[in-house]
Amino acid sequence: MAIKDWPEGERPREKLMARGAAALSDAELLAIFLRSGIQGKTALDLAREMLTGHEGLRQLLDARPEQLCRTPGVGPAKYAELQACLEIGRRYLEARLRRGDALSSPDDTRSFLAARLRPYQYEVFACLFLDNRHRVISFEELFRGIIDGASVHPREVVRRALENNAAAIILAHNHPSGVAEPSGADRALTRRLKEAVALVDVRLLDHFVIGDGEVVSFSERGWI
Picture 1 (cartoon, rainbow, N blue to C red):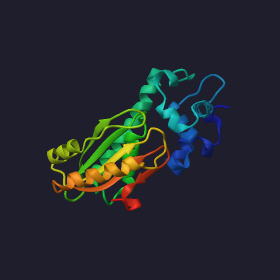
Picture 2: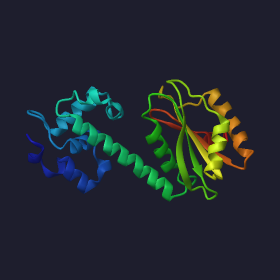
Picture 3: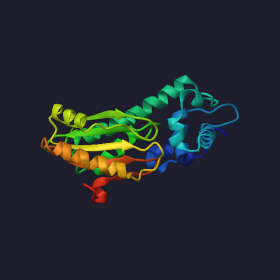
Picture 4: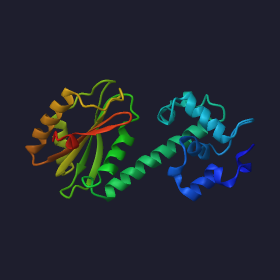
């Protein structure tokens, strides 16, 4: 039976309009994006198969073009649309962060950093530069590494803080392994960076480590 023939309260689009997007499952949201199925399968059937085949939404969204385009009903145009949707989401989070106060909006900060850094398959070290009211001046990916590490140079962090006229910074990096627990090296580096930026009157407010399902805050752990 086609989705249009289902009871109105069970159709993903109508369900979203009545109850909001948060009420929908991953498959229902994906079905709305797909819009139509293929012969013998509704968009919801196809969405469920895609999620199962990629072992979940995160892996599906991170799939390479050639992987996703092998799925029946998904070609380059759909892949491009999906990537555009993801980028809109990232820019929306960044706009929310720029409009508010990064220090008093930890959920927005955490969501933005996770959206930007979690998809990478290699380690990326980034920095949010803030003014004296803790509003975002800029976000920069400063160092890129390999699957299990990136070389971080405190002098470059200090240089970019001065060039941005920042009064404070928030650090972030991802763990491609998916395990967010900071290492001893992460803690030692954070201490070095805190001391380095303090020499130019810039405060280190937090350091976030991005894993698969968790984001660890050094500030919340009492390490800063």
